[in-house]
Length: 554
Image (tube, rainbow, N blue to C red):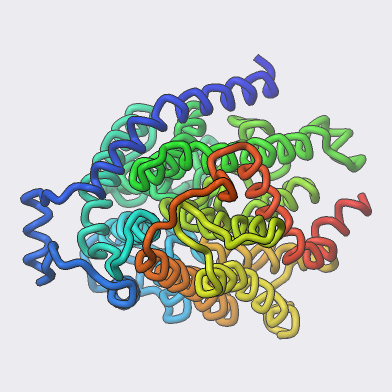
């Protein structure tokens, strides 16, 4: 079968699997977060951390819990990295340097998983398992908890309570992420992904030289890396490494894991608000934009421009021959449309317009379908703005799911929309004005700007993938990108929780003849339009100076 035919088959199979799992997984997650029963293991965790699982929290308390928990996680992971040299299973590696340890701690706690290091030569097994892999679970669960809190804001009325953060995080880990990760790990291990506690093996090559072949607990981290839309690779090559992603099947399966929960969450939303049609509308917008992005990326990579690529017959630079162009484009589309840093090819080697497309995917806010939890709450914020715009067009007070969208709700939504672009663009501007930051650029001109813009967009959107041409393991980038990750993660969360609290306090408004139906194609089309227009107005000048300028000169 040709690479194009294999790519089409992979995309069709992906859509089929997601369609089959959408309803049962979405309904299951709705039951998990709607249940009042606590499992025995969950009660043990609540006793350990000394919290009352039956206490309902106001949005401010919920937000403080998110920040406090995440701050402790940053400190714990930072300390674990710095003390690595005296810990078991260190493989003889020393403690991580302060700036890099800070960047990595901020990265994994924010679900970004940006990596300025080579995993096999920097992190021992204990840090990988007890530090990085644990954060893969809990950071995804935090995003899921915030999304559920926002959904409760729509579903509840005349209250200032959004649920219990500690209960939501524990349930997300124990009942959703852990079971699915175990099943995924079994499939990956059976498909050839390695999992052991061995150190590097020294082997002799045919040329008579020696080479160290690394080992480690890869499968267990690979499963949650993809399922939790984290992306941090055990090895420097990430999912391009044959120990993490050995075959075309595992490549496809990892894409399934990336999209499984984000594409099921609209169903959870519909169930919890009591109107499944609302979930279908959100899902339709996610799917249309995702498929459009996939078509564009694939087209730019297959119909490549430039004499070198045309002479070679394919844009294969930076891509694995095991996967080819179409499946590399599929993985890149999935990882940048979710908040995932996993890569099976080097995005820096994509064609200018192909690289511009995956960069635009992140600029959309990673809401199509987005990361675990973050994609759902992101698109719901845009849905609120869309209703407000529609209300302005017809001269009515906008309503969404029986809640009036007043100035207070619009302010929270506007702050959410502005926060991430501000972090990305200001960070890029600062980097371009600092000599030490410019010195880390391996390319000049539009492509060099694209590398820096990609880095800060990836950090601010908590994605984690990179244009590899930027030497980011410097003091400036370690500190600056760490700050961008924290601001890009927690500022939007605060605005989301504030919006949820404001919505929860309202009394429901009955639908009238003038109410805009938010479950029909007209509204879905408006929502897609607002997503694209907001991105175009915010990022287009930067894109015009980077990937568009480079692409038009080829």
